[in-house]
Image (tube, rainbow, N blue to C red; front, side):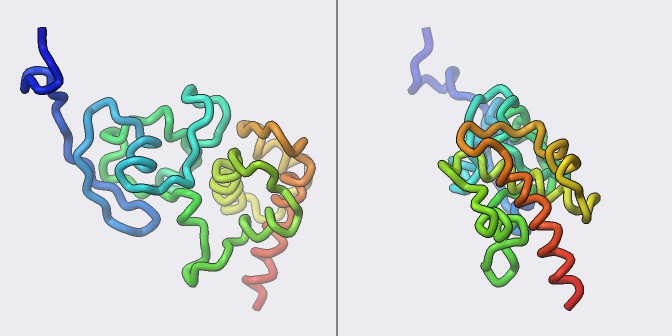
Length: 172
């Protein structure tokens, strides 16, 4: 029988390098450490929420190489070398609210806020490829993220509003 103090029971650690929100990070993590846990516990980026731990709810969505990904389904070692954006990275460079965050505020798309980080990252990526979504397209875009409070109408409005804000900012 091994104990926690027994070296044979110690789990091997692996070096992982990530660029998170533009900042180079080096971690030593067990092979089975989830990316969501590495972000939250090792890097203290607690904006990434963990809801279902099965990839269903979308609260843990981050952008890996610009693509929305459920961080509770990815091992940190699998993301080695990747560029990751969390909700904290969706701010403007000067620290003010990003387009999607501002739209959530403008459209009252927040309630309890638990699901919000996953929506923010998902919508941020969506708008890169779809700069002028209709309400139906916005509903489709957020279809993989669950919210227990809002009823989605204000979130759909926030997608459309975020697209407007982006167009306004690029027009100036």
